Image 1 (cartoon, helix red, strand yellow):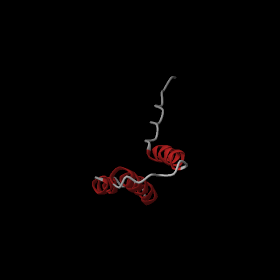
Image 2 (tube, one colour):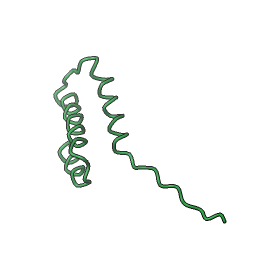
Image 3 (spheres, helix red, strand yellow):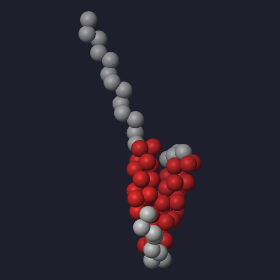
Image 4 (cartoon, rainbow, N blue to C red):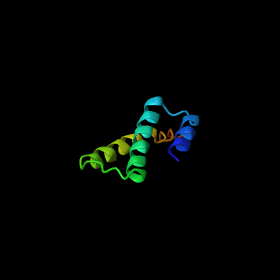
Amino acid sequence: TTREILQQLGRLGLASDVQAQLRELLQTADLVKFAKAQPPAEFHPRVLQQVRELIEQTKPAPPAPEETNES
């Protein structure tokens, strides 16, 4: 459920703004799924952009390049 997902995310130590964005997205998805809400047409591209931004904000940093001693 949304509540369980948010609890787990809180344990991961995600930034509060990221948690708030995820909460908003999940709650909106719940409205569409369970209450059969009909989001306006402009909702879809906006949510897609929000999801992309969340992915960028939360993806792991690339590993640091290994130093080589070529002497």
